Length: 495
Image 1 (cartoon, rainbow, N blue to C red):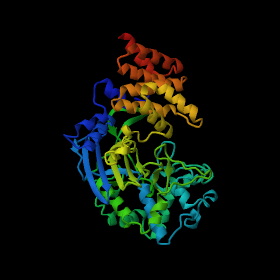
Image 2: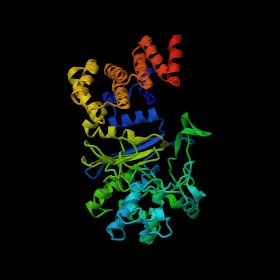
Image 3: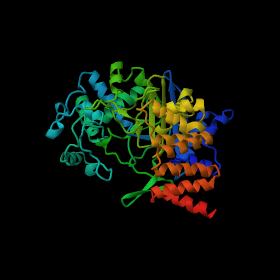
Image 4: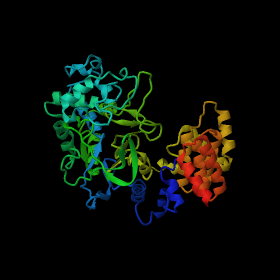
């Protein structure tokens, strides 16, 4: 059951799914309609988007409410936190120092910093930048920076912890290394790292409203931070409406997160970077945007989308439309499409809105084959399945899948990917095709409670409550803890 996004809810209650917006092109810009729908689905109060193509900003729009408490409308000058996108600025800063001959990313930390634990001394700047260092994290169990805002106390605490793995063995997101990078930038540049980044990036790129800060600072036109989650004890409860989020980034931590900006400023930063104003050598940018290779020869990252990590820059490594895609706080993201001369920035004030999940779809309005309706984003296995189903008909999904598996013994279908595709088809107003995929998933994965739950949802949408009940009951028998199936059984049984 992956409704849990909103496709099921939208359809169940008669609301238009997101892809119906294409029919409204005569009345408004399709990107605006798409983003407004996303804001509604994800409860995003305010959002900014900027699109850069051929070195120019071709779209720059602001939507929604910047401040819910006082009902202040968002405007182009509204300032949003970009959170961990800050690390991409740090990557640029390090490469600027490298171009000046002041450091090499292959050098160990101990060449630039004293008093490091023995186990840290051979870790390289490159391993720190790419989160493959194995350093212990300076965030505590409550996701708060150690030391209560005191840099020396924080470092004293984290230095007592053992390394988590041998450098280069794994990707594990880590903030400690970026604190150390801040110290190195400060030492080698002769000024505090915040000042170096302001002078060498903000000012050069014309980022007039961009600054460092957090929730403690009084920031004119700040769009704030909101969240749908509230902690109660050791668990998080999802609210129905946004509540206020609080973020505190001590100054020494602001290489890891701490920049606030606008979509206009971020677009100008990308233009300055790509035009050679920030880094002189293309080789510097290429190095920065190349994912780290682990000791086992593979790359790794946050997830299937952001599947690699360069020098401060997450990468979207794939055959079609590869990108670099810095993300921040689950609320802001930017993608630079490396082969398409296209960049898209989305800033929001809702933590957990995860705009990286729909930036590719925005790109589809400029590069049509990137629309999910055209099959973009499907795995190799699902792309092959889709190609054959378009030829032979979705009603033959069982036979087509069996034939593909017989011909290619290496081919594998993934339960979650099939489930996600089913909901995509549903949102595209293709219920028959969706039903075929959900049904296929139950046959390929007959011991999965989730596949029957999703099929039950689909059948319920079709008005086939009898068979929906059968599938919900099957799902519940496989997973007695499936509260969603239990609730639907209770409701449908009454009807």
